[in-house]
Length: 327
Ligand code: F6P
Image 1 (tube, rainbow, N blue to C red):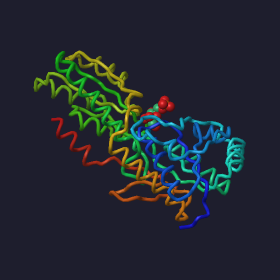
Image 2 (cartoon, rainbow, N blue to C red; image 1 turned 90 degrees about the vertical axis):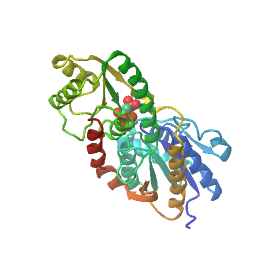
Image 3 (cartoon, helix red, strand yellow; image 1 turned 30 degrees about the horizontal axis):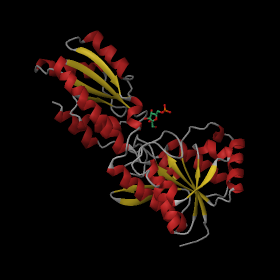
């Protein structure tokens, strides 16, 4: 192992995701095991610019593995998109003698890391931290499992009241550009329909399917809508359906940021621990400017370019299966 790297800074950026704390803990403890000094940057790239960088020791990450959110806080930072902002960030890192950074976040975080590492000689390693699960190079992202479990729990509750009142519910889940949360929540909660950005289901198709259900005397229906659906969000779709099909009393629930909080599931804690641990070891092994993911149960390294630009497709078998099981 190369021992050139002595001081590593870790930060979280973009939307928070349950499991980020477990990843921070794994970075700090693995770094300490290898006699490195680990620093936390507060509020992502904004904290890097402002020089909000503090030493993290083993005790600082005690009692956080089960906590949602991120102890390092997070932000979406426009200043880092500018040359001047990145220069200030570089100066802060140099002032703290930082040799390398570990960035936990999504697409925007890695885009910033890639540009920065092309401009300055400070290596970055990325960890996929987003509930959306939309990053190429990893089967699962940190926070996804917790988010779908939270969403399924919410939909189970909606199912009870939908059944009691014979209602049609449109439930909106997160996922700006991808339907991973919606597809899994839909299958896991036994929804009648799932509206995701990756498929071309129209309002006509949806009404057609709901009518078939009504003909079979289906007493209530649950439609899961990904926020990035082409036909609009749950509110919009519900309105369009209501105007042309009023067999059911129609209601809308937007689960929203509930999906982003809460104690991470065991799956997320284990994933985050593995990724955080591997990120430090990858740096010591001389790896630079890559994302560490998990593919088929093995640690997988992909370039920032691939993680950012390559598309992770939804499993078509699951899409087809969801349709069959909803019949
Ligand atoms: O990228 C994660 C995500 O939770 C998306 O699913 C959602 O659209 C977005 O973040 C919401 O971001 P914010 O909390 O900044 O409104």
